[in-house]
Amino acid sequence: MDSPFALTLVGLLIIGTTVGILIRGRTSPIVPMTLVPLVGALVTGHGPGDIGDFFAEGLDSVMNVVVMFIFAIIFFGILQDVGLFTPVIKALIRATRGNVVAVTTGTAAIGIVAHLDGSGSTTFLLTIPALLPLYRALGISRYILITIVALAASVMNMVPWAGPLGRAGAVIAQEPSDIWLRLLPIQGVAVVLVLVVAAGLGLQQRRRIAARGAATGDVDVEAIAADFQAQQDEERREEGYSYRTGTGWTVANVAVVLVALVILLAGVLPPAPTFLIATTLALLINFPDSHSQSKALRRHAPNALSMAGIIIAAAMFLGVLNETGMLEQIALSLVSVLPAAVGPYLHVIVGLLGVPLDLLTSTDAYYFSVLPIVQETAASFGVSGMSTALALIIGNVIGTFVSPFSPALWLALGLAGGANMGRYIKLAFPIAWAFSAALVLVAFAFGMLG
Image 1 (spheres, rainbow, N blue to C red):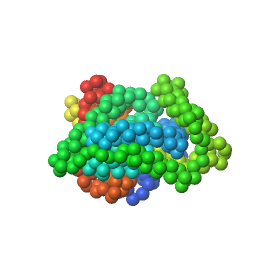
Image 2 (image 1 turned 180 degrees about the vertical axis):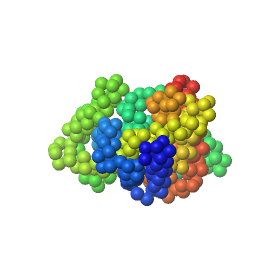
Image 3 (image 1 turned 120 degrees about the vertical axis):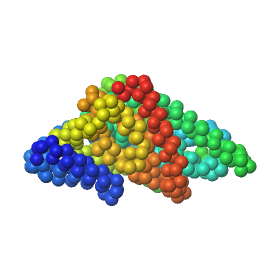
Image 4 (image 1 turned 30 degrees about the vertical axis):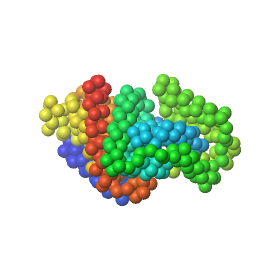
């Protein structure tokens, strides 16, 4: 079955079936991304030898990403364990002084800091329980809290050790750090914009509270900051953390973080060995013996291996689609029906639809199904894979925690006292889509997507 029509049909069936299974969310992404392309390869007449070769080709393109993910997640998880970011979050809570606009703007800043490890669940666990008492005391809607933290975390999801860049890097065979370097200017714009949006939401809430005649002061932020510290300490006691404390060790941790970021930005080392070295240094700095070091690794191994497993499964999915020629034939079929004027801007158009697409698909489906097709199609019009990936990342990443397909979002709603998904989406979706579209247009205007 090597005819262009057969390859196109089977390729579309593989993608459609995989996306459908991912959307239903009844099984791990590893299952459809492995078994569906396997069946497709067998149907098109390829035997075990070919399938092994397809997987090997796909694995070559993703292995560096897998290693980076494993050690980046463990590294930042260790820093969360030892409370490196706790003083920053406490300082930001104190800095708000009960002012509604300062609280919402401070929430965005806290969300940015808390999401340095790239884990949505960790970010929501750190921020929502700490800030919810402050929001309740001031009469600010809990949906505003979730929305601001979600936007801040989404902006920080552009870092190379977070999910989107790892997935995109696997698809276009680029290091996530190289994609990040290209994204840095727009990420800077996004950080400023999320603070502006947070301030605007604060002003809207202040007017709403004033219209009700409620007071907006007399909030004991010191007590709230102290409660946050107590919660962190209690969690560490319950988990049985045993690590070194003291100013010297904190300075050493900060130094490792800064050096690792400098190495990534300067391109001195690839991300995989950078985070491997950083993780080993973090283990030596924070844990005095092999038992506590092993315990730290076991704490974060489930998160690390979960993401690594998805990326490895993507090796089968991408290997089959690429090496059989299915992806190329799908792209050629699309090119044949697209108006010539649309082709060079297809990636920008899809980027502008990134947030709605995240509601219709899932993050895995978007990057492993939509991106490859758009990349191949846009390439026919001279658009580079990097430009296509940038457009789709910028367009989609802001919607990461708006989609009901995000498990971390359900956790956030639960932490906020059982908030309603429908009410949250009604508030957050238009904000996220407008935010996302603005970023895509800014990137396009400044030639980042050409």
